[in-house]
Length: 250
Image 1 (cartoon, rainbow, N blue to C red):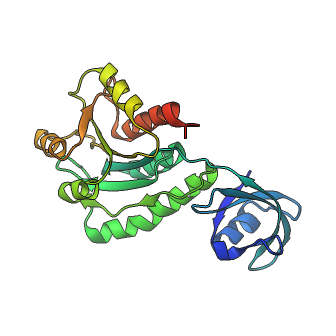
Image 2: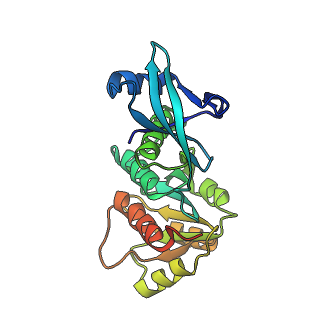
C-alpha cells in the first residue's frame, strides 16, 4: 500500500479528512494514477499512528482523502541508530541511505576519512544533500517507517567524533578485529532505548591512526565475520543484526 508523510496541519481529525498537496499530490495523481476509492496510508512524522485513508477526489492541486480508521502502531526499533558512513564512490551513498532507512536507522551522516576516494567540498555536498534526503523520504514511505531519517551534513573525523560524543554505544566494524562471539555479546548486551553509533569505513578501509583516534573517543572495533565486505554492505549487515535482536522488543 502506498504510504506518504504529511504535515500535522494537513490532517483534520474533526472532519476526518487529509489534504495532500505538492509533490505527493503529483505522485499520487500523475505517477501512480490513483483513483477515487483507492486507499493510502498516511503518517505524520514522529506520531505513532497510521491514518488509513480513502481517496475522495483529485483536483489540479490537491488529493482529498477521508480517514477510514486510525491504527496505533510503532514501526521503529527500540534503539536509536545513527550510521556514520565514510563517503563511498559513485552512487553508493544513495544505496546506503536507502537500505539503512529500510532497516531502521534514525540518522545517516556522511564522513570524510583519509582513504575516501570521493572528495566532496561543501558546495558539492550541499547539492547532493537534497537528493539524499528525498531518498530517505522515499525509503521511509516504502518501508512504512514512522519517521524519515535525517541526513546529516558531511563531517570530517573530528566533527564526527564530537557529534557522537554523547551516544551510549559506539561501534566500528574493522577488518582487523577478531572474535565474532565478542561482537554478538556486545550487540546482545545493548539495552532498549539506547542510542547507538555505527562508524563505517570507506572502500580502502580505515587508516590505523583513524582507528586509534575513534577508539580513544569510545568507538569499539568489532568484526563482521571472516569475509571482507564492501562499504555499502557493512552498515546493512550491522543493522540487520539489530533488526534480528531488537525488532518487537520494548
